[in-house]
Image (cartoon, rainbow, N blue to C red; front, side):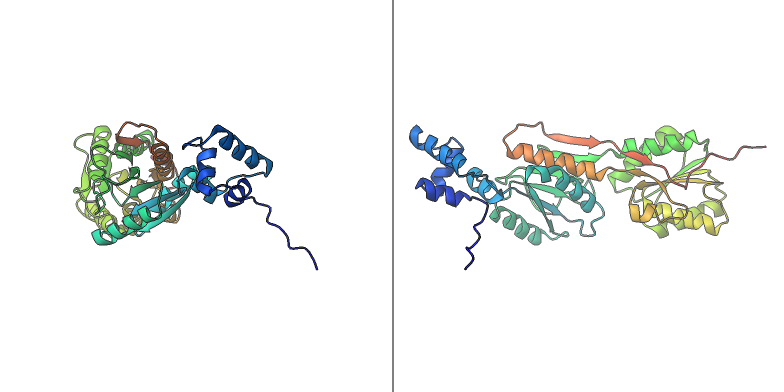
Length: 338
């Protein structure tokens, strides 16, 4: 009969059994904590080396009283902002042996409370709170939890660490690019003015395009962008560059211009905001747009919650990360007057 194959991994329980002590004593010995004789501590360390003990995730958790998991709490159930942010968190923490699990709470305070309690029951090492907009908090109080909390793309309390994309800087990138193409008659079509992101982008637009440059507030939808540009042409407006508050609006603007027989990018250059790949790359022509670098936002949030969990003292406050411009076919140099 073939001999049963023995597992190649030596566990913390194996080490405790060989040393004749409890798992708790092993944990204290290897972490240089607790009260015990130095000879006992040295003996356990020696046996660990002799039998080739290498802690896996479970053993590391037993040794350090950490779960090596981070909870990601969001009301962005569509995932537009959360999924790229989560990819950045995971990328930052995977080499640290830390896993991330997502809890979607919609805008339900009771559901949020249940998910937070479940995270604490799982002994997460920290929580990252994220959402759909930077100027609204999640419907749950996370200020007095026994684990560190970092906020990303949602509003946090004054004493928190909060990450957000720099909307004003991103808008300046878009407008400066349109101006560099020779576009001088600029219009900004954006979402509702109740959103701080819309207001900050509009202010940055006027800073470069001029105080009199038109800003048209509407909804964050394709239909809103289309209707805005059709109304603009009916009223005699003839911009040669349009900066849009998001990619959905921009795609609607391009559709409206096509209906009007206006060439993009020949007659009008169009720039969006978000770099939502599924929208920007499938627009016709593909959309030049501002990338909020949400993946980097998530990476920074992940590293921060890990640092806080390890006891580092970090300065609270709002930390804005720069955006970048992704140039595609909806922009070109302005036509030369003959």
